[in-house]
Length: 139
Image 1 (cartoon, one colour):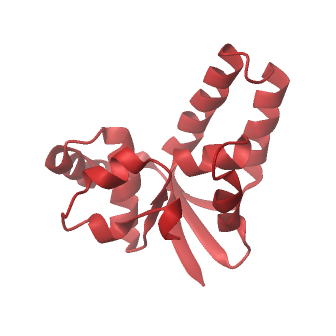
Image 2 (cartoon, helix red, strand yellow; image 1 turned 30 degrees about the horizontal axis):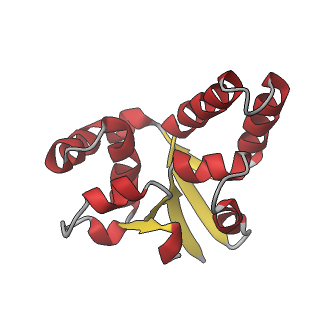
């Protein structure tokens, strides 16, 4: 059974049609166990709000997308449980606390983080945590 931490860039692809949404949806297979920090819901909620504000979807469509996310079976970890490790990653790699939270969870669980955020993945460089970050191209 495969296990992955997913970030908001992946979850947004489940909720809204985007480039590589089809690939991201493969992670919803029953034989894959997904993990995320509770931050995921706020970040995807913000994506839905932005899309509605830009008239890319209606308020109803944004609500339906968020309801869909709520039905996905994801093991959720509170951000509060990850704060020390997140701060260390954020300061070491000069990444946002938000992005670093997902990676801190991946490290804690010793499973890869899957992201569609190439900038974040590339920022890991040749560091020790590089092996922990997968993009959709690497799945």
